[in-house]
Image (cartoon, rainbow, N blue to C red; front, side, top):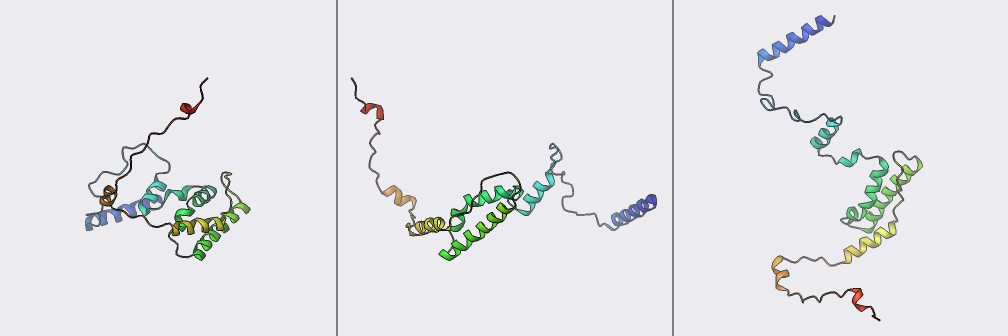
Amino acid sequence: MSEAWEAAVESQIRGAVQRGEFDDLPGMGKPIPGRGAPYDESWWIKSFLEREALPSDLLLPTSLQLRRRVEQVPDEVRGLPTEQSVRDFVAQLNAQIVAWMRNPDGPRVVVRPVNADDVVRRWRAERARPEVTTTVTEAAAVPTPPRRPRRSWWRWRRRG
């Protein structure tokens, strides 16, 4: 039975070659990528992430993903327009953290819910800070006063 199946497949391949269906395929005449490289067991995962332009964070366990998101909260909320949107973002992140804490998996990493009031306080402080946009010529035009050399602490010690 397998010989008959192989014969049928071979005849279909021969017919496709005669019709020219294998001509002008992408990559024709180019070397196979990674041909001389050592074997990597996760080559297909790496190629998928690269091809789809996905972040490699997706390979991390949930606890490490959450930890990384907690560290990136100030950067992520910086562009949000309202205080309520900042609080909603923190509430959604905290819901994910609590769900993980109820059923932890992966390595044991300390991940605590984020304090929404602290995030909002930092968000307000950044929005209140004036934007500093100076060009190179403006920065060069402002003279800077010469700095005094710093004195070391051992020069102030009493001798004797």
